[in-house]
Image (tube, rainbow over all chains, first blue to last red):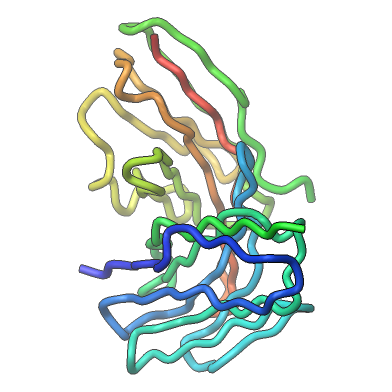
Length: 112
Length: 115
């Protein structure tokens, strides 16, 4: 059974710092991996999707990498800002047409 | 497109009452997912549909929960009778028929409180 783990559960950094959020999954046979952002009391916003054949995806200050063989993905946030404060969720899909399996998220706080 | 639309946004009900949550997926999407989010358990899959057909309902907690998708543009999640432990945020998500580049998109959720 696929399980997704995100460590740490919470992270506090000063503004301007570069940071890495970690996601690990137990079964390397995945279809794709998606990173989401969730603000308090809000829904999930998709940030990046990495297909199983890809190694990384970039969007602005965000870069997500995927290492299937080791069952890991990282989300790199450059030059963090207070507006980046939110919970970041990692989710994997094991086959086409199946549901996403989520980690419990990392809650990020960026102080000015 | 307006995205995935859920209603109501908030629901407060008394224990024992029937609750119906509604979802309109993104037009053209053929997969629809219902998740429940709590502080203790995070996001849990309840059920998902492909082409309006329920594929996996193993996450539905018990017989008090039921879900339907009568057509490609509408789904409901019903709880009858509701209990205080059902209090959570319920999310609906949808995704399209494309390949591995297909993203899932979430609605804003329904916050359910059962008193």
